[in-house]
Amino acid sequence: MAASLQVAMASLFPSSTSSPAGRRRRSVHDVRCSAINSKSSSKLPLPPINPKDPFLSKLASVAATSPESLLDRPVSSDTPPYLDLFDSPKLMATPAQVERSVSYNEHRPRRPPPDLPSLLLHGRIVYIGMPLVPAVTELVVAELMYLQWMDPKEPIYLYINSTGTTRDDGETVGMETEGFAIYDALMQLKNEIHTVAVGAAIGHACLLLASGSKGKRFMMPHAKAMIQQPRVPSSGLMPSSDVLIRAKEVITNRDTLVKLLAKHTGNSIETVATVMRRPYYMDATKAKEFGVIDKILWRGQEKIMADAAPPEDWDKNAGIKVVDGF
Image (cartoon, rainbow, N blue to C red; front, side):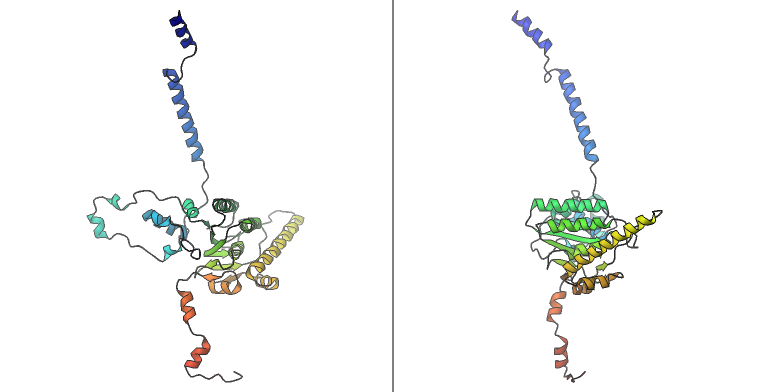
């Protein structure tokens, strides 16, 4: 009687873990879950990357050859990370070495390099290498918030190579609020912000360059900075009343941009407004004089200029006497 009762109970409540049908249902469930996970992971949005950008191309080549050299944190906060890549080139293998190799795959990296956005974030670098369109603004603000959450005391390095809210030919590609959004995010951070211009810093990108922490605003020797007035977007078939409204908004954005540039460069509002009447280009030296940056990242230049004697000493050593009135 007890044996027959156990058989009946087993038939009413089959074990899903021991029966073949239970194992089949569980395997189908696992396969379906893994398929859903893989499908969801394949739809993750990738951050916008300009493949023609020279900085990212150089960083990718170094990461492919020796990724371990890029995973070390910067020793000194005065030296932004990864800039030494441009000063320490490495020779490739000679043709004779390639001929003596066993296989062509021998000179390929043993493991794939890390993706560039993760590599930059590991060095606490936020890189702006495109015009300030909504996708770029979303990524930059998210990275700034993430780095502050990771460590609110470590500095954040903002590398800039952007034409701002316009293209290089002057056509508007983004609203002025894109630049103001990144600027406001920078001002809310608790971290020290080191800004580095590695190419072009035009318009709102120049404002971001100047808004770094005092003494921590850098510029490469051949980078360019430029400030200009905001441009009116294309009006098309817009009514005249709407054109007037847009023109007033552009004037408001211009006044705001002038005030912020005057605040961070140390110039008066009248001086900034005067030079912004037309596009005002600045090389590294002129940008330092105007107050956009604090230091030019030209290795050895500061020591050479510090050791150079002033013009008065040159005249004195040469025996030249300065006549009064000349």
